[in-house]
Image 1 (cartoon, helix red, strand yellow):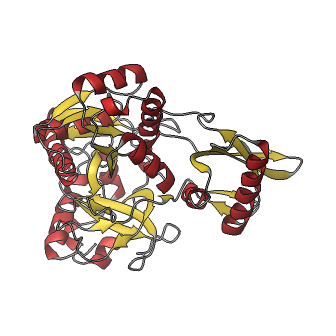
Image 2 (tube, one colour; image 1 turned 120 degrees about the vertical axis):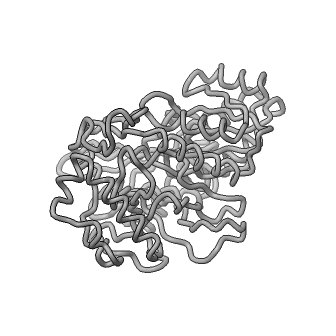
Length: 411
């Protein structure tokens, strides 16, 4: 992202604000924000990692007086101490503005009925979708996750036109609606999907079975939540609201700026956040910057659809495996569904990789042929041969939240 004098000034202000927190006060001790006068100066600042934020638990990121904090949100904390993010009223209002912009980009209007399935509470998702819908003037239906029977009944009875969900839960709902043969009773037209990367085959299944236009919505708890970017009707990447943050695409190994068009890791510096400003925060999301202005006419820059995370790669027998690459190779094989699961074990001194995938094929011979095809494609594209195991449709578990694709049982 270009850094002009106006952006430099806003970054200096954000650094000053961040240094009022206990965490950044220590991290940037001895640094004068006024010395940040160029991109080179800025890039000398250290990155902020999620482990840093965990270490600031509970409120070491708070950069305003406690009286200004109107809400906190938090990451799940499933792999360590949770990350606590304080919000001021301005932060909440700014988040709602960005989310309304997402809805408008997807063509949602105040005449729509927005069915919200992501979770509420400390997690940022559900309430973010609701804030944006209410600011837009659309009817928000705050279902939250789970209870699929009730979800579908409310869709029918209230005539929901927009579905907000993770890709996993959208697929679960699509399959259930298809199984019940009630698609003609469902009025969904659009779906905003967030919180996890998803492959083209899953995308096509959801769009086809629900009969909707799909939009990728982007965000993370540490930076407001979902709603800081979204794909448009042209479906060529995601627009980022760069009036609220400065972003970089960096080499995940060296931390240096990626070359134009090169895949790297997204790092974000907030420009407006009061409660917990972040400076050069490494998201670990892998993407690339897309050049030029989008044909949709929006002035906001674009990044490509996320291909995975720099920290979700596993290595098996010397081969690096990213879920996105597995998505890609399976999507090219006819007869293989979008749903798969990788199980990695270490037996008798050797890594064992089992790849389970769903298929509509019923006959044993057809399944065996598909298994051999998948094994050959995996070896060619990724460099290691799995034990491919074909299973029937709906045999792999579905999730109301994020799907886990890789289970590494070696450690």
